[in-house]
Image (cartoon, rainbow, N blue to C red; front, side, top):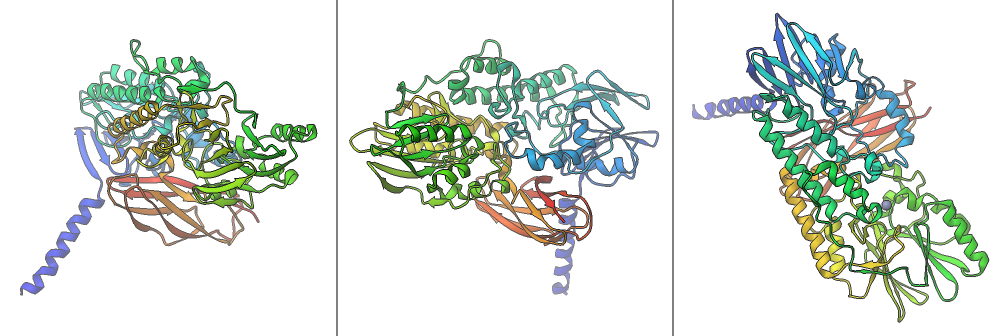
Length: 636
Ligand SMILES: [Zn+2]
């Protein structure tokens, strides 16, 4: 008898667990207000048999609704309201983000080109299919529904044109605030805030969390509405809004102060950095700027010729070794040097990193000068196949026939000892070259990684990982162990420089502190999820195919947590495409990247040329829908 009972008990237990794990959480917030907590939040206000929805219905249970109010156009939120709108609900969207909804196709059609040489650095988590827009709203508007009046407030910051909605129901003032806050004083991520800061004359590429000023004033506006409850798009309901907002503002200010104090841009942009600081910090608060590098020389030794952001190492016999070639004017200068007799020929080229201003004209240079091109093993793929990535300032000009050298490879060239290094400073894919001239200077060419004022991490899309032994921690440790007489050369800085040991220690400590601040700021179980948009990515990002063709994609995931996780990956393919398998799971160790492969078959019919695939990612407490994407261009 006993033997028969056991399976039944297990079966029942499995059933209960399945229900608990997969069903959404339905919470009655007040007599007329229901919250559906699933991958994202959905709020239903019900009166006289009618329903007003905020965000959407992530559980997919509602048959219909009167209106769906969208706070912003993030794809990972908008999906939950799509079906209701397609079934007839009126869609209400922020006017400044309306095009992201209604013209989604236009975005992706132009993005196949604009993704190259892109220095705007906006997140691409926008819808991949258009959604009908019925009403566009902005701050000051009101939406009348039944006997309720919904107030609209402009709350830009997390996205450029977001709004929030405030309404009093059941004697409770509710605020629906999108992603301006998460839980009790956290923020979903920082990379979404990358943007130009016009009043400090800082462009999008240099604008680390550039919308922090806007976000903080939006948070203050939200607080001034005296809401009783905030329901953000993601995460828990906030029952003490003023305290949560106060804490978030403090954390954002601490993050920014920490960032500015050791940033490379302070050297380039000088007092404009005071403008940046003033936008975010309290009036009486000041940034503790690190003093510039202890040693700064006026110019490099005579055997190094700066040509825009390239550097030419000249041997006594007239041969040259070049670092980077991003523009025609550099090639013209090299031709001039040859004509003048100062340079006889080029015998090698090292690419410090993949950014277009360092790579755009390498193929033309090689055509004219026929020299070998070197890089590290870590950089080879992105240099050959830039289109397989979504990163800042990608060149469209992949470089073939690269000679990829192992880390620390030594080469004797003329009167120089050259040592090639992988050097993940300004980006994860970045190299450096140590050049030691016999009985003379020792110069360490570090690409764009450091300036006399600090580290170059102002573009959050560059993947500056904050794990010990990686990213700038790796680079700083490297500098710490260098023999004492080296000088650093940055491709954009004329003056060679060197930090002293205290400064190297100081920068490292500020970064350690940053890790702690970010661990409190983000809701993830590792701070790097909030500064690395590419922790989950589809590879290749862009590819071309013919109708009927079979393609392979890999979903690559970097586990930024301190523990192993099981990641479930479920790609979403456009109608008519076949996908095999439908989903996959992978267990990834802490601080490691792993990948899982899928086969996609393009349909034989259909005229559309640009298709976007997305992938859902589930791990830990996260259920992230339409999270990362890839583009397929179909040509007949
Ligand atoms: Zn660069």
